[in-house]
Structures are given as C-alpha cells and as structure tokens.
Image 1: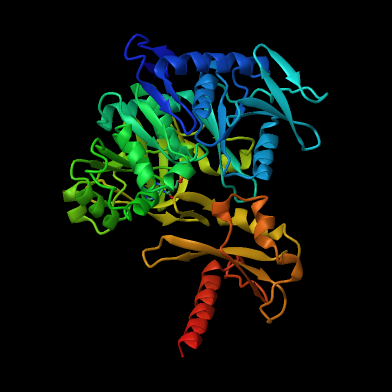
Image 2 (image 1 turned 180 degrees about the vertical axis):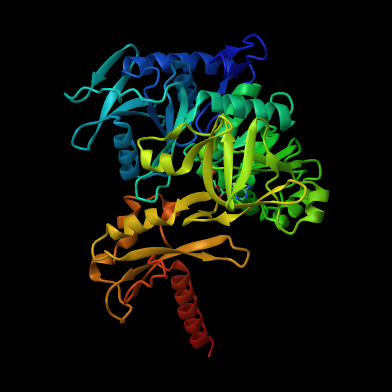
Length: 509
Ligand code: AMP
C-alpha cells in the first residue's frame, strides 16, 4: 500500500496493507490503520473549520498521531504547518499569528487546541463531527491562503526576528517523491529513520518517501536518540534500511562502536542533507558500513528538501578534499549567478508567506520556471560538478540547524538593558560552527553584565528554541562595526579568542 501524491489518495490498498507504516514514539500503525485514522483525522479537522487551502498547525514531537495528522491534512487539502515542541510557546504564537490561526492540533494528546484573543491557550474537546469548547470563545480556522494546493508551510529562522513561512506546493512534493523513487535506489518498501524534527524540512524526505514508496518510517524521539545502544537496537529491530540525517547527527553516532554494519545489518543507504558532509565522516562511514551507499544532497527548505545529489563512493572520496554537492536533480536547474547558487524548477517554493519584500528580492522566473537565489556561494568545476562554499549572508548551520544570527540579535535586543547586542559564531578550523556566543554593549570596560541580565538564558528560552541560545553572554564597551556599518562579528569572534587565550595563558602560567 502507498499514498499517491498526485492523485492525493491511498493506492494499491490490497498490497501489504498489514505491514507497518509508522513506528511512532507512542504507538505503531499498519498501513490499513494509517488510512483509517488519517480519514478520521480529516473529518475531525473539518469539524473544526479546516478545509482545502486552510493551513493547520500540527504541534508535537515524533508521535504516530503527528504523522496521521500530516496525512489527514493532505487528504483534506489543508497545508500542514509542522511545529516541533523544540519551539517555545512564543515562537508558536508568532507562527499562529502570521497565519491568522486561532486553533492548532496537538499531536501529544490528539486534540485541537484554541488560542483565545488574549494569548491564553484554551482547550477544545476532540469530538467527532462537533466542536465543543471548555470556554465560551469559539474556535475559527485561519483564513484561506492565497496560494492554492500547498502541501505544507514550513517556518524557518528569519532575519527580522520573525520566522519566515516557506510555502511548498503539492507539485513540489510529488517531484520530490518521483526523484527519490527514480534515483535513490532505496529498494521496495524502504524503512526510514526519521530523526530530524518535523519543523525541519529534512524530515520531509522520510514523510514523502514513506508515503510514495509504501515504506515504513521509524520516528525517533530526542529521548530515544540520546539512548545510544537502545536507539540503534530499535533501528535494528525494525530492519531500518535508509538512514536520513544531517552529517552532524551521524557524526555523533560514530562514538558508539555498535554504529556499524553488524549493528545495523539492513542499512543500505545514508541520505544526507542540510550541511557540509565532511570527507572524514564519509570515509569513516565507508569503513563501518561497506555495504551502504552514501548520498550527499544539497538544497534549501525553499526548494523542497534538496536539489542536487551525488553518490559519495571511493572514487569521489579519492578526488576531493572538500566534497561536491553533485548535479541538479531531474527536472531542476542549478546555476551560478554572480557567485551565488540559483535553483529553478517546479520544486521551488511558491514564496514566503506574506513577505512580498523577500519574494521580490529572492524569487524570479528562469526558463519559464520558478527560481530562487539561495544565498549560498557556489562554483562549478570543469566536469560540471557543483560546489557550495558557504554563505553570502549571516545565516549559519550549527549541528544541522539553520539559524539566522539576526534572529538571535533581535531576541537579545528585546531583553532588558541589551539594546545593543549581537550573536557571534565560533568556528572550527574547517569553518563549521562549534558554538555561538553573544556580546552586549554596556558602555564601560568592567566586563560586568547588568543585573537585569543575570537571568538572560531563561529569558531568551521563552522566545528561542534551545539550539539558538548562545552558550555565553559577554559584556563589552561597544560593538565594533565594519566599513559598511554592519556589526563586525568576525572582530567580536577575534576578541573572544583573545580574551579566552589570555585567560588560558594566565591559568597555565
Ligand atoms: P535548510 O533550509 O535548513 O535545508 O538549509 C539550507 C542550507 O544549508 C543551504 O542553503 C546550504 O547553506 C546548507 N546546505 C544544505 N545542504 C548542504 C550540503 N550538502 N553541503 C553544504 N551545505 C549544505
């Protein structure tokens, strides 16, 4: 059994309908059950006012119900908006207000929850065919979106401090699934590892791969993935064939000797995306998993998960000190314009929600197709292989997470006594970001944080997800600016190193 993304319905319903579709953190579902429950979810959502082109926020973390809700939303034609619990309430509220949403679906307890006009959450009973409320206010679904036939809207870090809603059409996810089926050689009914939060578009590989290929998805919660051997044993028990993650996540697993072909005998494919795949990591994986193919894919959320790909075999490893991102996928075009990677094809987003300014700056038409300026520095070698050489702007990747430093700046500046503050990435020699620190200008040289900032981490956590919170906040007289009057983050990183090394030298003396 599978889900036909073009026809928008379950297909081959008599084929292997009793095999597992979803192994959730809470419960497991067979394909037949997924079909029944997704239809039931769609009628429940309809009763709460959701319909085609009306976005529905789904909040939770790796519950089978989260997957059911996404499929139910597809059946209904309602674009789903996945929000992992890694996002604090305030961020969720910003997303809800961008959409004009007053109701969301909470996958943790399988209920629609309403946000009343004063910002307090009011719960609604999940009653089939009726809406009943624990308060007097009535839930209403958000307005219909201008863009029609979207599959999902995914919010990424935004420079203004507001997350940006990337609108992905149904034609784009169908193209993603067609590409996976045609080129990834994942075999019949692949079993996917799904580890990235659903609010991170990497996880859409597993969602649409499972649906289109009639596979199984193993939803691995943060609690499970930190359990080392128990995590790997779970994957082995479900005969996981297809590992999908950022390179950072796989790197962490290498610490465990059971992360090997013997420990995961069914594993045949590593599918990477989201950040640079280091040569050293690919080499170690080749040794530990001689039977597995490693696929490096590249692309921004704005172009439906990934756009380029290359199978990283021994020949590729032998020829490159820094891995290429490969070639454009079928039916897509990638080219370098003034040093910047540009992407064209049906998989390019329909635009950022309500951000005509950004759409005008980043989107254009190329050979009759939607096209997007990525902000990535790119190059093509003599063999037509594409390379990504980092960013033009202040967007970074840390541990696989996409972060706009300006979003952290905005959150810092909203703190008391921090009107002038900036986030600074500290990089390893290979350019990857090890951690983020922050500076606040206090107007004097004593290096003391104002009293109002003693609790700064807790204050920031109300607004930012944990992966965006700097590890240290340092006081300085003023923030240095570069020639173009932007905050000089490189200078601040240098200042940090100077202070750090001076302290270390004093300690060692
Ligand atoms: P996201 O929207 O979270 O998928 O992040 C997209 C950004 O991550 C891209 O614009 C690149 O800067 C970076 N990125 C994604 N995949 C790769 C890759 N395979 N190699 C290098 N950078 C990558």
